[in-house]
Image (cartoon, rainbow, N blue to C red; front, side, top):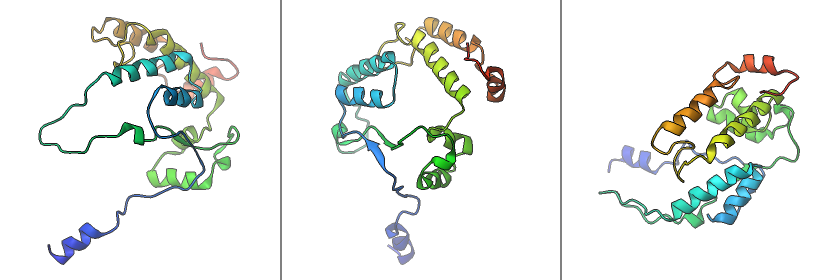
Length: 191
């Protein structure tokens, strides 16, 4: 191998980095207790936990595909960590309260200011209300003959899924610019 190619191959990876912030991390492994713990940390509604558990149980019955000419060691799913998030001691009101190291990471990744606020847990009240409203809509359709592992509301027939998608689309606010939604909902819950 030529010295130029060898130097290129042996150099340190330039695009990786580590962000040193305090995190809330669950133990490695994947089982129903870990799924429950993650769901609780994310403050998910009960229907979402049940949907995740149903999908996990279905996943346990599946065989891993073995593709031709692709060689890799078996994946040890219990050696992986499935949840890790920056610790936050209190709800944040602005990006000024976010760990500066975390903000530098968002900048390195090219994340927009609006998305940074969302990821850091800083969001306008009306956006949070609409998110809760979207969860309520999802909850109405999550348990309707979905089959574990499929998209919510989609059992392959297209019937129930199409109706659910149309109902969601017809709800007030869906598909409208967020600025209009915010101005329409100041001082009142979406509905």
